Image (cartoon, rainbow, N blue to C red; front, side):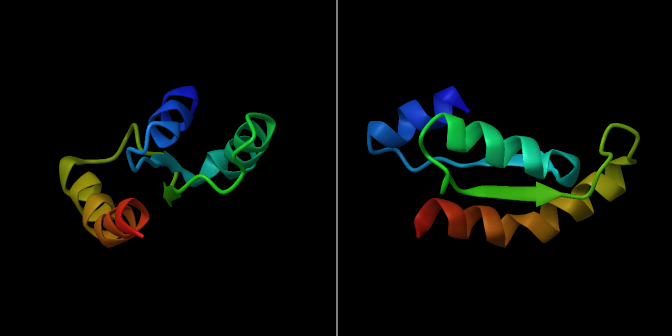
Length: 72
């Protein structure tokens, strides 16, 4: 999250992707760092035991949200 903040301060569009288990932690950390509106996309949790096909599906679902977060 520190890197995302640094990139944004440099004018480089940034965002992060995490699983939905970390929503509260992401909000708390970004708020504590002073940028509560950081762009973020959450995927279903857990991801570590997903098949390749399931991960591709997660990525396909998140893709437009990620592009939107970086371009708007």
